[in-house]
Length: 252
Image (cartoon, rainbow, N blue to C red; front, side, top):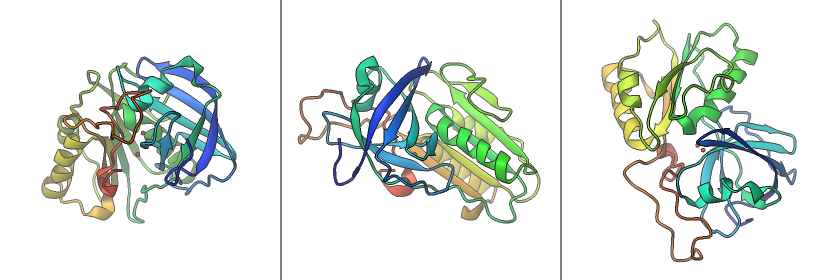
């Protein structure tokens, strides 16, 4: 649904189930959507029958083709829509992409960590670094309720299990063996976990803000409620909405 916040129209051309909780949507845009060039970019999405927007990381944006990998749950505003096989052919509204992945010049390594909502950005970052900085050491830690998605990430990955709707990434990060020297740490996932990790990175590891980017994509303790302006839910409010702490509501 095109709106002032999501002025770019796109049509769903393909829907594919990647795992129990991950659905791939291939969309054809109207040609007005331009990439930022940053590999972790996200955008706002408005689905048919709703006025609220949700934020998703971009898996791929080339020409008119946009690929979004959507995490689905038992209920939710976008979940119920994306879970339907007949969403193919629907028109959605999209906001302009934004991104934040910018390692400093002195970074001698990169560590990526995230849960299922962060996988699209992690996959795209890994591809970007392979093409632009193939000599840069890269570590990936991915948390998933669906087991390892072996073909999803192009780089070697350590997989960690988490039950649906839960996360233990703060414990995972606290136990990491960090490479020597300055580097860049990118991480995204559940907001409370990200707050704990941000404190650890700053206070215990002494990293300044140039050398890490930690973003909350969703909240496990605070669900979103449908606003009164919304119609009786064609799709219910999603408790695992992408909310990025670095941009207030704001990253899919």
